[in-house]
Amino acid sequence: MENNATQRNQFVLTYGAIMGIAQVFLLLVLYLTDNLVGSPFGVFKWVIFFIVLFIGLKSYRDKFGGGFITYGRSLAIGIRMSMLSGIFIGAYYFLMLKIFDPGLAGKIIAETEEAYLTMGLDEGTVEKMSEALQEGVKPWTMFFSNIFDGLLSGLFVSLIVGLFVKRKGNDPFQEAMKHVQ
Image 1 (cartoon, helix red, strand yellow):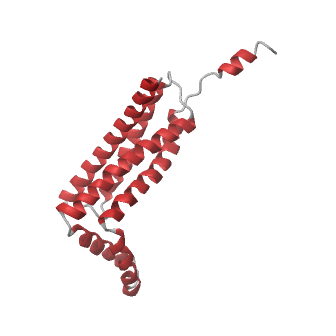
Image 2: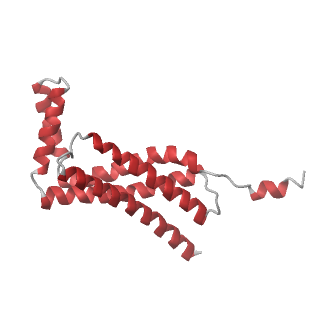
């Protein structure tokens, strides 16, 4: 039984790592093409989330559940996969901000301020928000906020994907009791 639990955990970790690596690859492409902040290509993060979670949960259902999985179980597994993905993304931002491109924080702040001004906010408000932005783009803050983002994004996407993946089997207790009545 312990071996089966280990296989289940490895399976979840594998799909979480696949999701995280795919999203880090997307972030690298966006970074190298100078589209990291405010890019419409950021929507591909959600595409990756949906595809990997759907394939992962469906495979989990078929491999470990005999073709059946409850909505709650698929939700829990999807959140675990997504949190691991968030760890990968958090590590990416941590390394970028701390080692590879410490100037990235300033660029993120400048582009965000520019976006706020374009939205019509006055300069005083943007300056006040700038202080919070400077705290938000610190390496450790980005690391932990991306783990939390993985949790919330995983919850949101798993709620949707779980509807399509869930499949209930017959309840053995109900099957046995139907002959008693």
